Each structure stands twice: as structure tokens, then as C-alpha cells.
Image 1 (cartoon, rainbow, N blue to C red):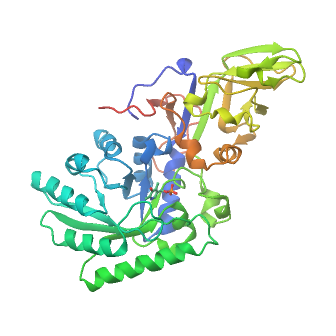
Image 2: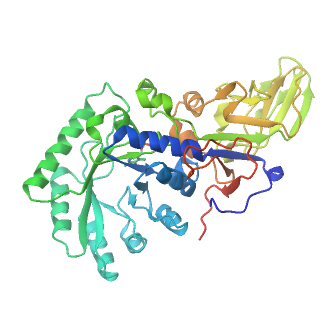
Image 3: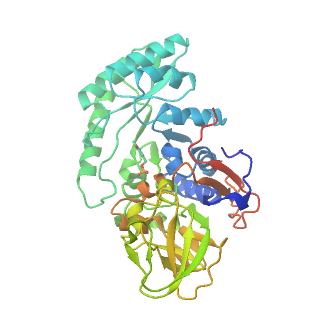
Length: 409
Ligand SMILES: *Cc1c(COP(=O)(O)O)cnc(C)c1O
């Protein structure tokens, strides 16, 4: 991953530049904001498209104490890279993956009796004792045991020779909508279950409920640990939270770039891309950019009026985004040339296209925009994730590169 051999910059068609200094800064900001609660850096889905191992290292350097992933394979990638911090599995692993989870020293979340049984068997097979977190569903109804079931599971873990209760948690459904009263209701239900554990004499371990929105907007949800994803990457969870103090200090950490592959002058009336649906109103310079929907540049973006940055100017996409390439209308007499840098997400000169802008055009959330950046796009790391306060190396002279979803095993 981060240690992969650098790729010749001249061979890159498009790449995602990930600023480790920004990630480290965001982690430190979040850790400071929520203290004395601890920060868990959520690095599932290849670190929201940024590369999970590099993000994990930068977040730990910034002060995160825990990491979280969705599935065992993601935990294995971290362990293979030598990351030995505590890793929480946010979903209960299937019974068939429990042995690997225990062997890798991952912390399973459990919410079924079968899960408790599988974890206890896996620990017994390794002649070890494994800490687990039990999850209670307080109203989102995705995963988690209902309150009665969660108390019963906590009791079962408590009574097991092979398991210990390392944590007890829930997840908030509307923390990013500060006016919604259901967050308070979920936190009341959570407190009630915690009260029942206490009455049973069970120490819950690390208590946690907050995602980024909870951590930023609902201090009461912070408990002992907050699980931050989107804010760690430098993005506000929802527009409604944009006014919160720490949000202004978050730094987006990913820039999606490419180089112009081909340029041509086209006459007014010429049509561009599949379906010939984009018609040039006037003569202009059209540049072909070698990224497409297979790289996460959603096909719908053109119809939604998306723009990219070329030569420090916003230029509209021209015609449907194809699988591997898209076209851009640089306007009449533009100086665009093959090899010019194109910024699809991020800053160029005084202009910026934020992932939030794509999300608004696509009627989705920033999360989906970032996660969609495909495995074919190399991640190029700049800045220092582990040197104190070091700024990003914008010159990108010795970048390390990793293919996004490639696993080193
Ligand atoms: C993905 C996830 C998070 C992180 O959410 P953000 O909004 O990105 O901070 C936290 N907890 C759980 C259970 C998740 O699935």
C-alpha cells in the first residue's frame, strides 16, 4: 500500500492525491474536540476511497486510538501492513470469518447469540480470550440487538470463559439533522440499556454512540469513544452542520486529478460523446480527460452541469462521461494542451470543486462520491502523516502510490 513502489508520474492517466498532513490535522482536531472521549478513525471502504492503510497511519499519528472497518478483509489489510492498533469490526462477522477475525486480533461487534457462540468457539480454538463489543439497536434498525437481547448478550459475554466485554455501543440515525429529536430519543434508550447493565453488575467497557455528526453536533453522544469517518477525511457530514466551530477547520484530504490526453478545435454544431447529445454552441477547444465512470466519475455528472478545472478555470463537461474518458469544453481559443493537469475534485489556482458539489449535483452525499473513486485510480500520497505539523508537499516530487483496492496478500 503506502510502501508500494512509486509509479512513474508520466504514466499516470488520473490519480487521487491524498494529503496525509490534512488527515493527520483532521484527526488531531477531532481528538481535541471530543476529549476526554477517544477517537476511532473509521477506515472502511478503503478509507472512504483514500486508501485505508495510509489513512490509518495518519489518523493514529494525529491521535486516533482506535480504527474501525466494516468487514474482516479490511481488518486483514491493516494487519498485513503492520498496523497493530485496536480495530473494531462495525458489523458482526459471519461465523465463517470469526476465526480469522480472532486470529488477526480484530475486535468483533456482536449482536446475535450465534455471533457470541462463534466468537467464543474461535477464541477457544486459539486458546485465547477475546474482547468483543456488543451492539444495541436503539432505533435505526440496521444492525444490533434489541435492548432486551443486547442485555442478554452482554450477560452471555460476561459469563463466557473465552470472551470479555470490551465495549457496548449503538449507532445514530439522524445525528446529521440537528433539529431532529430522534437523536435524543436514541441516547435516552441507550442510557436505559446501560442502566440495566449496571444493575446486572456488568461493566460495559468502552461505551460509544457517535459518528462524525454525533461527535460534532451532539456532545452527549460522545461517551468514551467517537467513530469518525467523513470528518476525518475533511468533510462536514451534512450542510446543516457547516456552522459548527471545528467544521471550519477541517481540511479536505483528497484531490482527484488527471492529465489532458488530447485536444482539438471543434466547430459550432459539432456534437460530442455517446449519443451525440452535447452540441457545441460555438467553435471551441475540447479536451479529452482519461478518467471515466469506471473511475468514479459518475456518468450523470455531465447532464447535471458538472465542471472540471483546467488552467485554473471552470470548464463544463462536454457530453456523456464514458467508462474510461470524458470530454471538457475549454471554450474558444483555450490554451489547453495534452499533459495539462486537470482537477476534477479539489483546488487548482483560485478555483475549487468540492466533493460536496458533486454530491449536490448527483443528489447524493459526499460519502458516496468519495467511495466511488475506483480501484483503477492510483492513490498518490503527499504531505507527512507522521511528522508533527508538517505541511503537505504540494510539489508531489516523491509520491508513493498505491492502487486503490489492491490487497497486498
Ligand atoms: C460508517 C460508520 C461510521 C462513520 O460514520 P461517519 O458519518 O462517516 O463519521 C460510524 N459508525 C458506524 C457504525 C458506521 O457504519
